[in-house]
Length: 341
Image (cartoon, rainbow, N blue to C red; front, side):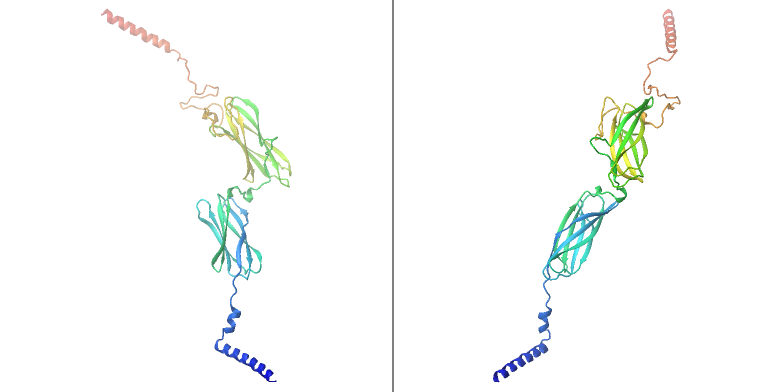
């Protein structure tokens, strides 16, 4: 009985001491319960980058930061994304994204879009902050943004590039005093799944040495079925005896879709290929003036196209020999008179 009284007295003593401690130090018991937990660990696993909307001037890059978390819940996490120009090292654009509380051992994807000029390259930096403190950073490099095709210029049709088929074929048509006709043909392949139309091709024929346009013609392209190759034909008139580059441009609703080049070697002493740009041969600009036939010269006389342009004549003016003979006869008579005096 005495033992039971002792236990009860001890229990009452513990309760009394607790109440006294709570009254004297109110936060003594709460401090241990409300002590903040140490936040978990956060780092960047990877940063995939993909192209988004592409316009004529800008490119939007989709950036995804995959954050790895482990440990206690982590609050107040933000991710800074920024694009830095590779040449100037200037920040082109940046965005900051808040992240919800990270819990458990798992990955979380944080996405944003960065819109930059569609040229050159950029360094994409991803920086993770926790409570304003930097905890991790990752860098990715992107380049060649000018190669991304805007949506309005996308097309499944392009000039054929096969070993057995040239994208541009050139043939010699009729010839005449004014020059020669070139028969031009472009091979187009539809690599899409549907038939396509509303296309046209412009053939531009340029004299190789001067880059002067000798002729230009635009022709429509008919419907091309999926997976098929079709040809478009045109004719261009040029002066003979020169070499030419033939540039073909494929258009869709006035948008440049694709291009190809070929050559026409009409100068027997010089030859060019599609990847050459300069040769040292004589050029005469008058052969590429607009129009044909004779024209007025500076003194009002008619010039002709019979091949005598620019050639000096060696023939004497009629009657010029008789005048010289008369002058010589008078000089002889005066000399004889002086001697007789």
